[in-house]
Length: 404
Image (cartoon, rainbow, N blue to C red):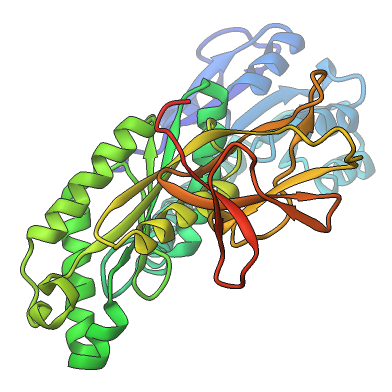
């Protein structure tokens, strides 16, 4: 319930008695009257309180216009009435034109003053009504904005967050966890053979699968965990304060719940079940920014696909080491392999021992890789068995470890 309008008036008049006509009129009209004997105290009160009106005898002001401009700096709503004989007609008019509310020459026309104050009280009440209406409008607009924002940030089909929201929230959480020196994990998962399912049963049936995956996902993760649909059948999750072990256990719980769920027509899929493949990565162990964390989790998810689907693959750190033959002069050494789509950029650093080495994040499990020397020559790891890629190039094969 809106409280009644409270009006306050500060007065500085030569008559110090509480029974002055001005005080009587103000109190009769509902003003709380504060009397002052010094201008400095009245000015301090105006500066630090919500005062609607000040009534001042002009003899206390050396320069009324300077005083007026000083008050306007910290209060645009206080009306100031001057009473006295100091100002001539031209100065009084100048006072009103400069923002003063009124000037009353002594002896004061108290009936005229009362009428002026009644109109002022009406003005204040109208202002309060408009302010209340303004606040209610702002509240409604904020509610509408929040509702529309929620709709924009939510995937209509699954009820999960959108990719845009996931990106924004992810950056915020990375910043927060960096300040707290705490881990944060990213999960990327994809529905296995979803294209085949869509081709077999049509998009309406495929949409029902997506809806059910959304329900399962919400039941697995905490309410505070941002979960989003970031592609057709691809999803992403942020796990605040979760290290790689918690992320892997949570991802496995999701995988099993999808595996146990029943989907219409799943018996026609390879394996007779609809499943998901999951990849994980963790801040700051594997990367220090959201984009790299998503890429690493995505690589791990595709590694799950290559290893047979319906599994969880975590990102781990692997120590790559290459000791070149004595006759080989090296400018740089990079690691390329199936874990990074044979792309360049994963560089090793030359150690004082003459060995090129680096700890790099890779999907856990078996990977195929080689050392790219001087940007041109692909060399197998001498410490690993030699195998051949489909194109005939020799590379090395290793099995990464969960703990390095």
